[in-house]
Image (cartoon, rainbow, N blue to C red; front, top):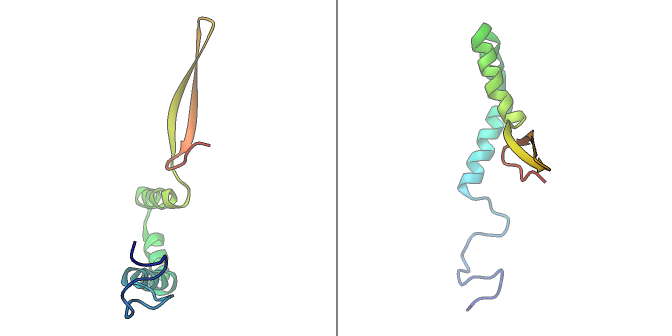
Length: 95
């Protein structure tokens, strides 16, 4: 390897601590959501009634608390089969 770890051949490269474009865009979007966008979102959500409100609320809830995946585990003990349902958060390793 021609360069040492942490060094490159481009002396005019990105300065240390500089934020790339995607990160800067996400930061701008987050600021909008937390400032002006949040109030409008609350107004829109509060304007929903009945099933529309429940559907929107449950959809948002998925981002707060992950869904649980149902897994069936079978245990065999001396000619008996025991079925057990195990719920694991999606994306979890289950450990």
